[in-house]
Amino acid sequence: MWMNLPGFLRIQPAMIAGLALFFTGGGVAAAADTISKTALRAAVKRGAKLVVGRQESLGPSGTISSEWPYEGVYRVRRPGKRGGIIPMGYRVGGTAICSWALLKTPAFRSSKLTQAAVKRGRDFIVASLKDPLMSPGFNSTYDVRGWGHAYGLQFLLEARASGKLGTRKAFDEPIRKLVSILESTEIVRIGGWNYSRRGGASKSSPPSTFMTAATLQALFAAAASGFKVDPDVVDRALDSLEDARLDSGTFQYATYPRVKSGRGFEDIPGAVGRMPLCEVTLYLAGRGKVERIRSSLEAFFEHWGELEKRRKKTGTHEPPYMIAPYYFFFAHYYAAQAIELLPTRLRSAYRQRLYKLLWKIRESDGGWNDRVFERSKSYSTAMSILAILQPGLDKPAAWKKK
Image (tube, rainbow, N blue to C red; front, side, top):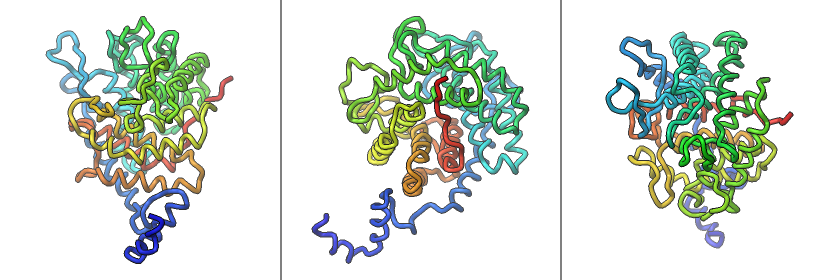
């Protein structure tokens, strides 16, 4: 390329500006191709309206619409119910993420409909803590209630800090309860968390790196807000993340340091959905470096196409990289979070790279969806909104061991 560069530039002089941006740290296209602030604001506004309009209820007939359930392939059975139903962990987790996103939008300040929807979401999450399927525990070898615990905690902390959804004191009890549940449901001896445990709750099982990292961020936020968090629980979980890191910079799907193949799940394309999240979480605890965060982002952008191949497809883990569709917008949110921890001079270019990918797969109604299930458009749109808003949000809380 270098030998032919002058001729290349004579053919396409407009690319000069793009190359200038590349060498200042971003690799994005020319400024004329950027997603404008006006377009970003409009997308957030339209997305928020879409999410508000999709609030529903999976409760008994006549129950007020107060939730945004996430939908995946997993179902549970309940006494007196025919067939499988969406588990409570998905209902709470999806509601928490949508409520969190709406709380951060300009629409929350100006729209009474948005405010009312978020308040209903808050009430649903708090009330769900009394449901047996959200109590401390683990059912058989697969149980997703931990996602509800982690993101329920994250939202309630955001709601408490906002001062717009009730007094701070009103949130203290449910926050303490969720912290306690997460501490009591860590994987025995090893630490960390996983929705899939081959030995069930009573035996050690490899922790999921991406669930562990996301849960740790919620616990970091709780500690930063003055709530007591067991440092031993945090240390064990952080150790498990470090044990799962490969020399290539990838992270195992589940921590199993004795067997690191570097293939499939562990090949770089198979891990880019969790690499930025894991690197950020370790960095927040003083166990990482900005250089590692940037490398994880470069891997995310380079291999984004492998994530896109699995978006809105059936099944879960498909070869060659065993990528599941549910990684998609989860990965984009945490990539956006990672960008804001880079040096200031690099952020704008990286943001544009992310926005362009989001615009590439934005749907005609202004929403986003990574599953074959229409219901999961609410979650996917909320994650996209949070990714777009990330530059204006507070940095994630660091872990300060006391």
